[in-house]
Image (cartoon, one colour):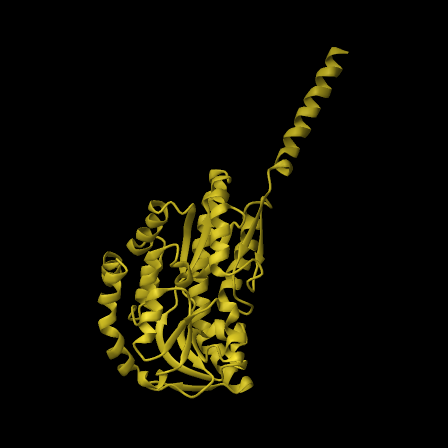
Length: 331
């Protein structure tokens, strides 16, 4: 009896050890973004969900909630700080309310080319590390996981082609809740009006605004070409996107899964940059050929001349001169 009892105990222990991986804890997470598909943010978010599930052997189950279904940019960031939303993929401009350093990325013509942009937004760059540290210093209860692109930003409206800065004089322009952006466009004579992204369509229909600036992906994915058929290639900004995570969510993960999320997010950040860059060409062609959007070039030299003096002035005003210098030092 004793020998048979020992055999049974050994068998039970063996089975329990085999079953252990299947009993590993599952971490359910929600990722929020305000845009609608097709969009590089959503592509990157879905990539994260799929890759995290595969590489964690099903321990991480990330669901993607797009089209502002969980709230506006600022609402979802607030929720993330409390841990009720786990991750956000969004633009740095509306997030500047929480992270003032992000104001800098709204400065026009900040990056000379994509090479400098890729280097500045890499997770190992001094620029990234500076902002990641500011998350900690400001006690936001958030963690910066990655920075990415999203394509260049242009101006769209429902009145006429914009060629020179003065063409924008008197236009009621939607801007995100970022004071730097308002000051930039006020310099053209436009009348800035802060509004959430999802309200642009109805605001254009009702005449609350008649102009806005955005990436081509955002303009296409949210169907804003239906209410703003004039698209002027100001190319005033390399859009900067962020992937951020709630520290509540991050801390409840074991260290191996924390590292995994960091690695996958870094890949997703690069994916956003590449996706936005590709969309600038592909989506613009569709907008013209299928949707009748009237695309025009602008006198970029005139815009650069108007905006150039604002870089140092607005960086100083926003207390981001040190960060501006780090961006300029990128080689």
